[in-house]
Length: 120
Image 1 (spheres, rainbow, N blue to C red):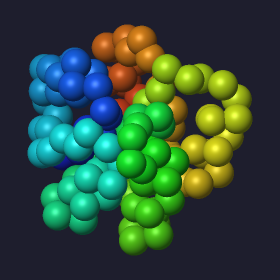
Image 2: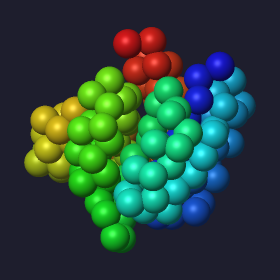
Image 3: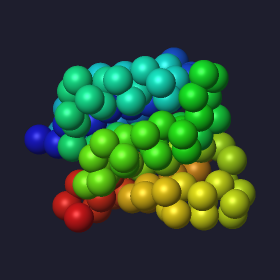
């Protein structure tokens, strides 16, 4: 069972992702409402995967991605954002994101992407 940390400032997105993931056999080991808390929880929980929103208060998803990858270059981070602009996708990939999902989230796409990343 793959262990996942969900990082998103929107509680309803965290709940939606948690529901989708648990229904498909993933274990959600933690949640964080901003990038700074996400980095701390990554260090504490050492999940197999992270879903990371880009636009958040205190520390953006890109900043959190960079901080996590500095600590663990093998971390598997899937960026999740309503902002699917090319520059954000490029920035996320250039900084080590494993994949990118665009909101609104489609369950089949979320599960197939996270399954693929988990098996990389």
